[in-house]
Amino acid sequence: MNQIKAVFNGNFDYIENITVSPLSRAYTFSDSVYEVLPFYNGRLISFDEHIARLLRSVNALSIKIDIEKVSNEIKQLMSSSEFDHGYVYYQVTRGQDLMRSHMYSDEMTSETFGYVTPFVFETKILKVMICEDIRWGRCDIKSTSLLGNVMNMNNARAHKCDEVIMHKNETLTEAGASNLFFIKDNKICTPALSNNILPGITRSICINALAEIDIKVVEGDFSVNDLKTASSAWLTSSTKGMAPIENIINLDNSLSLNDPHYILCKEAFDKRFFS
Image 1 (cartoon, rainbow, N blue to C red):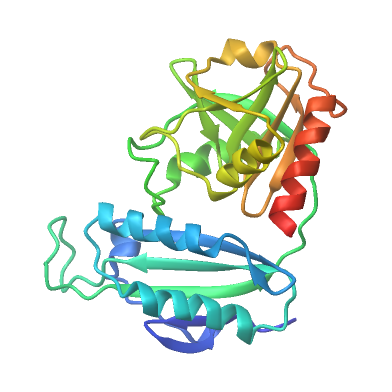
Image 2: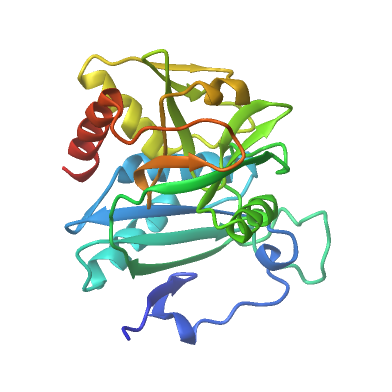
């Protein structure tokens, strides 16, 4: 088994040699943000967009970082690995408390941590379930505070599902670790960005790929009922790519994997994502 290469506060080492204080605010408050940056054939996918989103997340939490140093560490992690395909996980934490306190010191020094791992990019056909969105109110920040996602995703696993599609009062938000797209009345639809939805980088890739072939994606407020009449649906993320949904177990609808609109979208997406 290959040892996992990592970096912590600027020091590169193997992950098993890295130690973290129990008073790190990532541990005590989930006071941290992260990014997952995929790479394919040794090329980081949408690197600038991931860095911009990381910067947006830390700014939203008033965490100070050296974004050039962070960028270089991410690139070094990828280039130091022997993998052609994989992803870099990178996390920024506000820092360590002398004593656990909700109110943090403005003089606190941020912590950075990242690692690189191989990953096989393949299209997986998904079985999902609908559930209530129980997450916090600022899901547009890519925080490590993911307990709501964990609860919903593991409940889905107990029902032999791969993912969830969440809603707030019947209005669709996103999946547990992905953004949602579906086809209804020959239109490609996706929930509009809001505080309840993370602005997915792969979501943007999908929208831009479709724009290149003159297919407009309708971004708006959609309900669970809209999914009941959808002809096809898929999820997007940095590790899923564009993954089709075959079955929503608690929704009376049969989704097609052969919808011609879906096939056209998949071809456009793969061309942009992997090129």
